Amino acid sequence: MRSHLLNDTTAEQYRRSVTDGVERVAAKLAATERPFTGISVDALAPRIDGIDLDKPLHDTTAVLDELEDVYLRDAIYFHHPRYLAHLNCPVVIPAVLGEAVLSAVNSSLDTWDQSAGGTLIERKLIDWTTDRIGLGPAADGVFTSGGTQSNLQALLLAREEAKTDSSAKLRIFASEVSHFSVKKSAKLLGLGQDAVVSIPVDHDKRMQTVALARELERCTKDGLVPMAVVATAGTTDFGSIDPLPEIAELCEQFGTWMHVDAAYGCGLLASLKHRDRIGGIERADSVTVDYHKSFFQPVSSSAVLVRDAATLRHATYHAEYLNPRRMVEERIPNQVDKSLQTTRRFDALKLWMTLRTMGADGIGQLFDEVCDLAREGWRMIAADPRFDVVVEPSLSTLVFRYIPAAVTDPAEIDRANLYARKALFASGDAIAAGTKVGGRHYLKFTLLNPETQASDIAAVLDLIAGHAEQYLGESLDRAS
Ligand SMILES: Cc1ncc(COP(=O)(O)O)c(C=O)c1O
Image 1: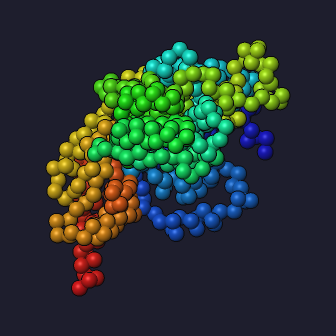
Image 2 (image 1 turned 120 degrees about the vertical axis):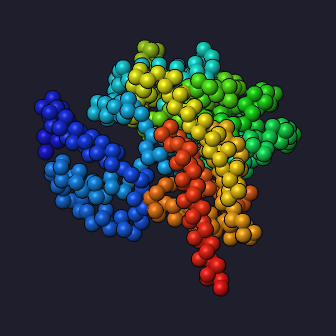
Image 3 (image 1 turned 90 degrees about the horizontal axis):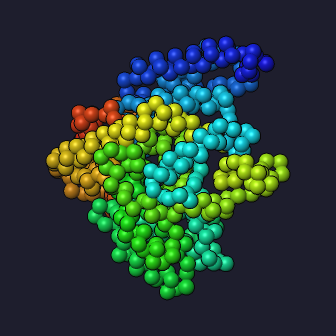
C-alpha cells in the first residue's frame, strides 16, 4: 500500500498516474460535442450505487475506466460554448497547472510552518488585488472558499465593528436582487430574520439609493444600528452594478460599513475597456471577489479584502498548538490569524500561475470579450419578437422569456419557458439557467466563455423557441 504514497520513491508512478488522468481528460475535452449528455438522475444513480467501495480495483487504468462511466462521460462541461447557465467559467490552463502543483505539494495556508512561500505568494496576490481595487495602504485580506464565505466573513467583521451590545438591533441593507448568502450570513451571525432590509431596485436592477437613504434614516430613528450596506457589483441574475459612489456617500453619512459583493463583477478589475463600471469600489470597507467566476480560475478561488487590516482581528484566535500569540511578536506570518478556515488550500497558486503566464490584461481581455458578446446577444434578443429581454447587460448575463404570439395567459407562458429549459437540459444540446422576474419565470444565459459566438446564442434561442412551441402544441392537443 505504501506504493500509493506520494514521495521520493514513487515520483515516477506519480508522473505516470497523473499523466494517465490528464490524457483521459484531454481526450474527453477534445471529443465533447455537447455540454451534457442529458442523462437523468435515475439512469446515472444505479451506476454509482452499484460500486462497492470496499472492493478497490487497485489499478489506475481500471479506476479511470470506471470513472469514465460514473463521471466523465456525463459531467457538465463548462468549457463547451453552449454551456450558458450559471456563473461557471471555462478555466485557463496556467491555473489548472497550478491546481496540479498545489494538490501534489499540498501546502496548507493556515500557518507559515505549513506553507512558507505559499503564504508570501498569497499575501502578494492579496496586495495586488487591494491595489487594483484601490483600498489604500492599510488594506489586507485572505483567500476563501468562495463568495459565500467571503460575504460571511465581511459581515462578521462589520458586526464586530458595529458599536452595540445587542445584535438584535443590527440591520444589513442589500438590494432585493442581492445574493442569498447575505441572508444566510445574517442567520449564521445570529442577527435574526429581520436583520436584512431589502432595498428595491430601479429598472436596470440597481439598488435605489433614495430608498436606501430612507431606510437608513428609518433605522436610526427607530434606535436600530445600520450595521452594513451590501452593494452588489454584478448581481447574479442581471450583472447589474449598484451605484457604488452614492452608496459610499450614504455609508459615510450614517457611519455604516460598506461591503461590496463583487463576486461576479471583479473581472472588471482586470478589464481593459470597462473598468469604470466598477468605479466607487475603492471606497468600500470590505470587498468580495470570486476569481473562480470572472478570472477564469478553477473552483475554488475567492478572497475577502478589507480597507483596514486591523479589522481582520475579529477572526483571530490563538492556539498553542498552531499559532501562539508570541508568533505575532516574532512577526511570523500565519494566515490563519485572518481566516475563518484553519487547514486551507493554496488556491492562490492558480491565480499566481495565471498572472505570471498571461498577465492581468490577458484575463481582462477575456472578460471584456464576454461582456461585449452579452451586448450583442442583448441586441439580438431585443430585436426578436419571440422573446422579451429584461435589461441591457452591465456584465455578461441575459435574462429573457419566450413569449408566444398566440398565448396571453402568463401562467401558460411560464410553463412553456419552464418546459423549454428542462427539455434543453435533457437534450444536452445546450444549458440555460432560469430565474423569476416580477413573479414570472424567465430564462437566463450567463456568458462567461469567450469561445461562445453570437451564432451559438442564436442557435440556442431557436432551440428554446422550438421546445416551448412543442410544449404549447401538446398543451393545445391536451385541451382539445
Ligand atoms: C453576487 C454573488 N455573490 C456571492 C456568490 C456566492 O459565491 P460562491 O458560489 O462562490 O459561494 C455568488 C454566486 O453566484 C454571486 O453571484
